[in-house]
Image 1 (cartoon, rainbow over the protein chains, first blue to last red):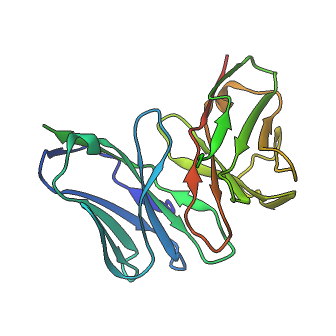
Image 2: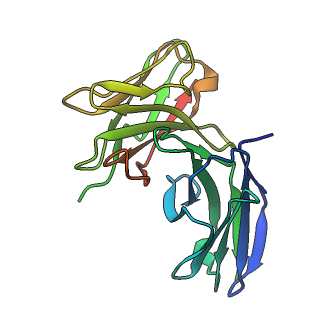
Length: 112
Length: 114
């Protein structure tokens, strides 16, 4: 079982709709969760971080965390063509283990 | 306020040569992380360094790869006797302290081994 799993996609969403990206992780002691956006040929850019169960909203982005189900998701409202990118889910274990473990990413395409 | 800087951005080496990748963290950041992204794969952790110390090298291949972060100057990832399988994008990230979760990524170095 992979440590962090994402549906590789591609996921196609019409412009203006809600894009839903999902991620599961295997290690129950994971404490910190991140969503990065990566455009083709570019470096990862942090979109959201979440640490507690529930929802966290930032503009058009909402991250959702359910530690019991070991599941984290990212919702993008009012999707724009500029949101077309690969979205990487990353997980960090407890304090003292600083490395990020990434999923392979979900490629999102917003259709105008 | 400059971000994480990496150079070179593109590096071409022939098999058997050495590759040196440099990373200057953001101002005020003392923690550096190196990740590798193979084509069509996710980012894989390689090594975590603080000034003059390697904290976690659990992701580094056992041979040919080494990293340092000297007291002065950038962090360097060194790959000796490169092989075609080393072709990848190498990203450096930095964070201000261990208590800060956020890692900021540099633009990456794309290594091509001929």
